[in-house]
Image: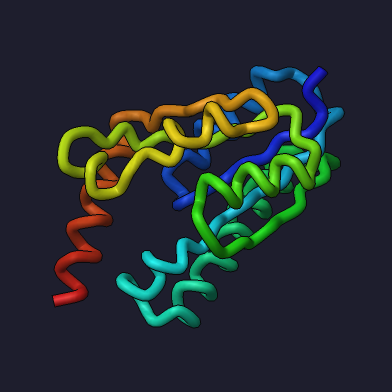
Length: 156
């Protein structure tokens, strides 16, 4: 029986898909934990570390609040870790005694996958429990592409 679900998040792209999956589980006897891993290498490259950490804290707070609002009465905790993403997800899943890891997959391929790696691919054989990967809806992918373009333009 699934009672504890770890939800690693990188962004808000899969917010709706996460809720839909949890509705399909058809149980409120669950405990959720939203996790974001601050990849130390990425934080240094993308933003000053303090800003990256503040944005990470805001991300887990937002996802947790959305879940609490959508599923009143369900316990939702948050966690922020720093390190190698796949390793930190495994450590959190073990510490939380998760029955399931529920996460989005951006579906990157080609050069994007080569440069960024695939956390999901690396996580599956290491995870102490089952891993469910969610795909973003096409409308969400367009938003992500626009967001990435906007972020690139603002950094120039």
